[in-house]
Length: 210
Image 1 (tube, rainbow, N blue to C red):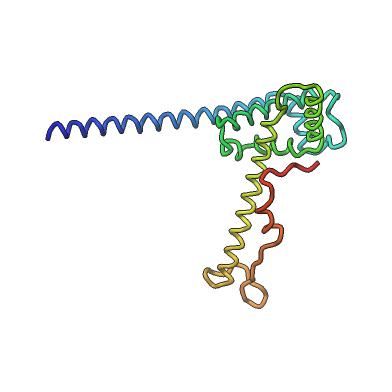
Image 2 (cartoon, rainbow, N blue to C red):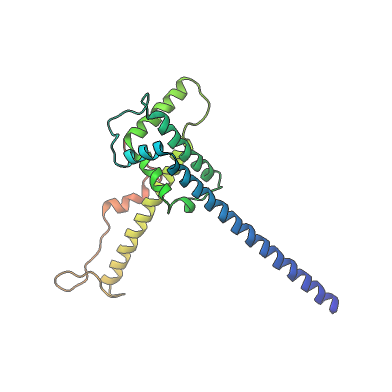
């Protein structure tokens, strides 16, 4: 009897130790990911030339100025390299999209990726690599990360729209209090727009506008 009790106590002690260890490792992992995000943010803001270029991109001030061969090319390469390194860690699973999505880094990645001049430069880089048989994938991880962020935004917008329509239907059917009424006092009948219905079938990683 005592032997069984001793075994149970020892097993419980081992279980508690394992749970404590796993919890500690999980906290350490979260801290490392947070430090990585903070490091990428600091790197972005520590380079004045990179910040200036990003502000121009964000304001769409370089729409008609090609980057390749200009003085800004090296600065853009530094910016893309930083974002590509972050995308590489995300692609390997070191970072999660949830670590990046609610930060200014996600906004910066998306603004750079969607800029037509940057897209033109990325096409130039890909073509140059193919013509010169240069190994590598350019800024592939930056583009993958940007596409994932864009897809996440579209998905969240779609879910919000669906949630709003469901609430409208429930109100119209009298299942819950009516929040949107027409002038005659009856609940407004909701209807999905064609664009909302079709957006479910769109490609998850739409290319940015060129």
